[in-house]
Amino acid sequence: MSITSNKKKLLFATFTKGILAIIFLLLSKPDLFAQDPQIDRKTGLIRGNPYGPDKLNKRKSGNASLGSTGSTGSTPLSFGLKGGTNLTDVRPEDQFSVFSFTEVPNASSAEKQYFKLSDNRGFHFGFIARYAVTGQLSVALEPTFSNMKYSYVNNYTWVDFENNSNSLELNYEHNQTLNYIEIPLLIRYNLLNSFIKPFVHGGGFYGRLLSATKKINVSGTDYAAGNTQEFSNSSSTLGVDDLYIKTHLGLIAGGGLSYQVGPAAVELSANYKIGMNNVVNEANRLSDDTITGGNYDVLDNTKLRNIEISLGLVFSL
Image 1: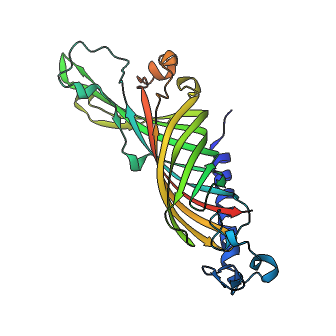
Image 2: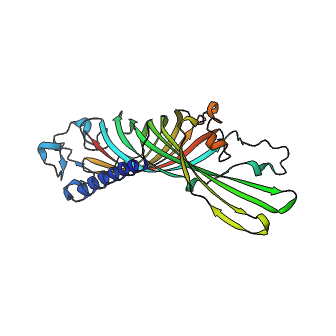
Image 3: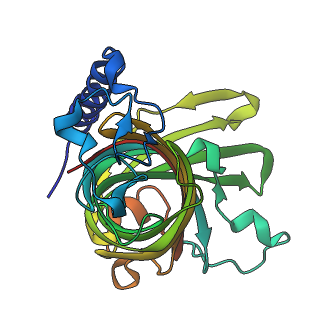
């Protein structure tokens, strides 16, 4: 299964517009901004309820404060949407090269130079299905499409031993894009039972690879015959699904803030995701001649770690 760049951009834009439209609709209705409900101890009714006595004022004594869903909803179930950005941190465990070195004065000269976290930006969007066990504790499944990117550079130099001024420097920039469907299972605890709730959560996730691509940019400097010529070749994009395994497993820890807006909650969260397994297919590492022979590259054994920042909108039933 392959998702083109245009389709991914369209899906993400549609999702973002939907979130913003719902938030705008809620913010444009002043009666949705109900303050923290004040219960009349004699009648058991909510003072100043904007929804009328027939809708929400007739509450059971066990539901006199905020309900178990963290809103004025009458059931423990809530559903919503989320989306945001991914920042990927690559942790190579075992490093590989297409060359066999007989002598390496500096071992690091043979290693790939990985881009830092802030340069590896992707995105995600998905759904939220949450069940409130108590007023503070809930369990959620959050099926998510996750786009992860990471990059590194290989630098090579060729020198003519008969004429040291005759040399060639080559720089290969490799940009990997991995698309996963992930299913996180999270246990959440609300630190405060109010309309603005700080919360923490944690759990694990199972991911399934949908597609993988590699974009290669080649540049360099040619010092042949005493002249200096810089060059940059056009980039090429390759499908590399077979170079990665299908399964991605890991742990999640994070937290955020939830703000109650009438029947819905706007949630801002940040998660740290730790990949537990090597995502590279070791059996197929050398199987693509275009990459190994044409671009002098072979993938390292790699675990992925992500910082995930999300904005969500959740409705209680």
